[in-house]
Length: 418
Ligand code: COA
Image (cartoon, rainbow, N blue to C red; front, side, top):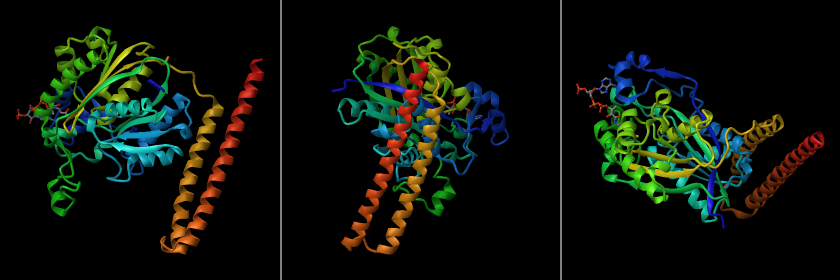
């Protein structure tokens, strides 16, 4: 039985379009000075391309993470997408990501715990791994909050941004990795951070649209007070739960909502050194579930983390929810770059995944058109199962070719080394 789980790959994607505080000055009654001093945000990324979405950003971040982890999409057992701005109520954004990755053996589900979602996801991944139900899990936080924001509401529009971050979590016999977590909820504060309409409580109507009830509504001051309290308390508790003291913690990577929340809770209340609290919210704003993985990836890229470091991830958000986890970092960074051949292999895999998805869609349509009701067993099921077998066979042969090429390449590089 595997007792440990480690983060072995990480990736991010942020859209190219930047919205600065000065841009916002032209849109609502605010100033760069107010936003910077009250929140710490200077600019944020906005997903403008209508062809792109939470799922496509999640897929980009996931591909980056898989490449760094040297894990093939076919080896994933589970994909968890934490998001407050999923593509649809259903299907799950995670299923769209699974299809785009061609992760043929992975289960997939979305996790809704607002900005605490990524840490919830890490805990779920660890649980699945140590229970023996999965070995390799992709955990993603991805958000297109810009499409849920009322751009005339200065209370909210200055805070949020878009982006995605992903990690690959894998079972291991090596001690360390995910140590422990605390997950919390106080549903009595649900109305403090809410998209009131477009769910089943208040389905979309002309009236809800006219009221702007499909946008994020927030009680900023109350959320602020809640955040300061739970970030400090949850960090203190989770560190003790891991059998550590605050002095043993090398880095705290908090949810990037507001620099004042981070300073009040972690620096002031916990007296934790500010230089060991990682922050990048000046560049991205609050990206909800994506904020902790984006900060993790940036911290790695800035070579802040080293093997053996104890890291606390701590977040809070709508629900109200909070979550904190302690992870002992186990992987040397940076990793050597991917070989050109491997990059090509992955590019081919993703192209092939898109073709397979296309074929499956059309096969379903054609079968539906020619064979009518699925209740009339016989022909429909027979033809369908034959087509399934052909599809599986094609996928099997393609994987064998793919693996054969890899072995040849390995052989060639061994020969060259000799
Ligand atoms: N630009 C200029 N003035 C603004 C403004 C803006 N974008 N937004 C609010 N103000 C004004 C208010 O109207 C108020 O004016 P008044 O004193 O004349 O009434 C004043 O600034 C102070 O407002 P207040 O709400 O007390 O500011 P604050 O210091 O609490 O900061 C937030 C507001 C939203 C930045 C802060 O409360 C916060 O960060 N809360 C947590 C939000 C959060 O993290 N949400 C996501 C959770 S995952």
